[in-house]
Amino acid sequence: MERVKRRKAQGLQDRYLYDYTFANDNGQNPVMEKAHAYVEHWKEAYRDNTGLLLFGDVGTGKSFFAGCIANALLDRDVPVLMTNFPSILNRLTGVFAEDRATFIASLDDYSLLVIDDLGVERSTEYAMEQMFTVIDSRYRSKKPLIVTTNLKLEEIKNPPDIAHARVYDRILEWCAPVLFSGKNFREEGAMATKAAAKEIVSKE
Image (tube, one colour):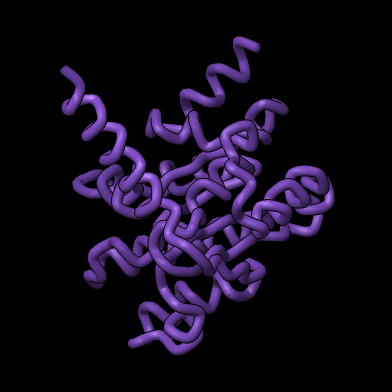
């Protein structure tokens, strides 16, 4: 249990991710069945290097889906890291090339790497080069990758330039696309929070 606790502290760097669990699923998103299936068949997914590309509108549950997988596998003592490119780029900025290579290689030590919110990072030449290095290194390690993005599949299949094409082509090569459509759970949650707050402040 101590080891699992350490793995979670290392793999889930944002505290809110601890709440992204199957136990907290409201059962309203039918796509969640695929998350359960991925965890149940983890050994095959790992062996076959099966990744997922979770795409769809904002607030439709992509990060929650990925977080549920991450938490379930961490509970099984599987090394998982859930992060995003702005965090990775922050770590890489201002460090020597040798240290950059060591850090990128360390990402491949995890059995599963989850990159949340692809597309929110700044698309500078440096950022795109580092992104490709991370994705390509992961691809060559032959270990699974899960990516979440608000980009449409058409945008990923038809990137604006070669730099994006290199990154997106790699992802499409070994990550199965899963569409998230339907209601905006985040908006719904915000409305419930507002209603609860209003009720609290209106009490005498």
